[in-house]
Length: 153
Image (cartoon, rainbow, N blue to C red; front, side):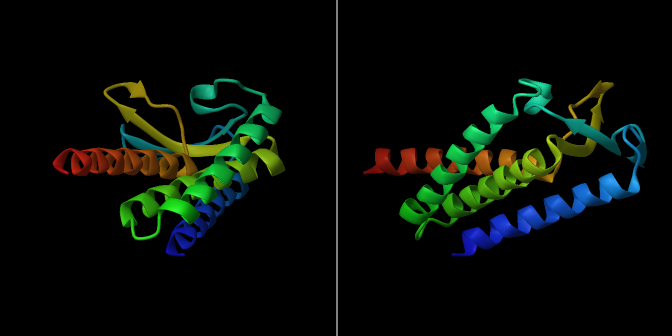
């Protein structure tokens, strides 16, 4: 299915960009891209978003495994003929696997996308995180569309 190709592309881009950061930058180093708004900053995270549950690797192994199995199940059972749902699940699968690879092989997640909005430094994130967020947003849109269709019937 094409949704697995989306996941594989996300995993590849995610792992390649993380490899670039790890191999070409010092930890904590920051490269301005758009002055005062966007920079590439070499950062590591042993937890989830905003560093919550830092160091709880077994928890993340278990939860991520369950999530990956659930996403694959939904792709197999529900994505046929539902393009938006399939894309959402493919993005979520790619993001989940991308960060899972980091946790298994590095015992931490490599983050590097650093955005500052009106002097607020948004938590540093990566391609996998972005893919997960976009996938969840698309899934939410799909759910809204499904709800609207049910009301029309």
